[in-house]
Length: 144
Image (cartoon, rainbow, N blue to C red; front, side, top):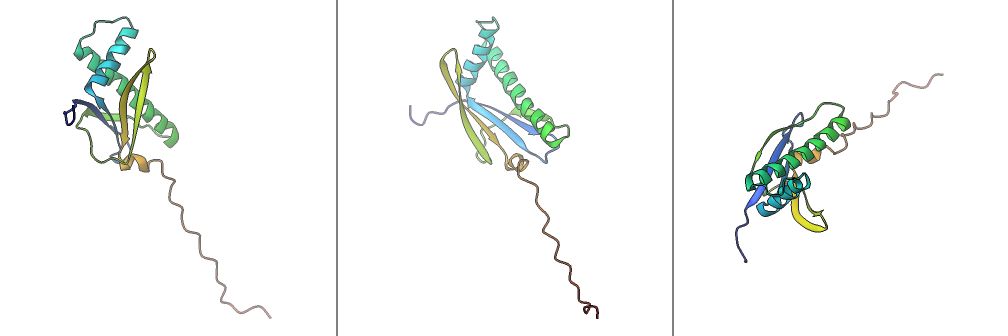
């Protein structure tokens, strides 16, 4: 149905020690439910409630984003963690966005959107290089 409002499941997480860098993930609520139910079915819980499926989806996302923080910790050689995770509204402006489709038991599932704030993007920019020092000037007259 054209123009129908789609319920959206979003999670935004701030990355510690990064000056307000944010990670965002979101997908239509029915996709979050499908992912949560697939994970629960895989561990022997075939008749999960909608709340259990949503909680499982959020746990999966939280673990994935924590893995990103661990990678940043190794890269930056300091402890970085995902903090202040919370449900959020679908953001309108982010620095980088990618759409992902998953496959569960040969069935395509998605899209899931991953996005990062411009502050997060800047974590991967090469450090600014200092300009080269000016050549030494020797104003003294040459020796006789």
